[in-house]
Length: 208
Image (cartoon, rainbow, N blue to C red; front, top):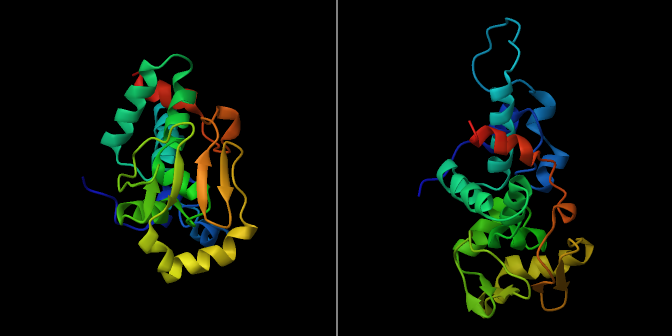
């Protein structure tokens, strides 16, 4: 599967909102603060009003960019959410939060989801005691997330141990800050997620 290799700052400019794709670097220095217009040649003319369909697309892209997914994979997650009972928009966000790369990010093991995805793909992360290098794996209630034995000798891990004390963890996860082992205490609920996304708008986008 291909992946986006361009500037992530352009993704924020396309949506007109900070998506924190670089972690803390986005807080300290953000391109959107200096260049708020979308990327591309600017004609100098007044921008036309965005249609309802365009607003739906932007909302969908915000979620997709934030979780680092291509359209085909994102559509599969949406189809799975639509088959579940309950509100499809809420189901979608919960499924995205349960992705292994997102859980690694939420535990504070990485500064961004992109970095968390790289940690998983390189085989540094264990899920229930077994190496798992699939970022899209869904974490279930009671699952444990830890580091591979060989990875605790890396310089990255040593720096993480020194900095992890100041990081907070979401309520549906627990973290042993001594061993850097996390556990899913429960499945996330829409109220547990701080994402500022409108799930209803995404449902409307795919319903047309």
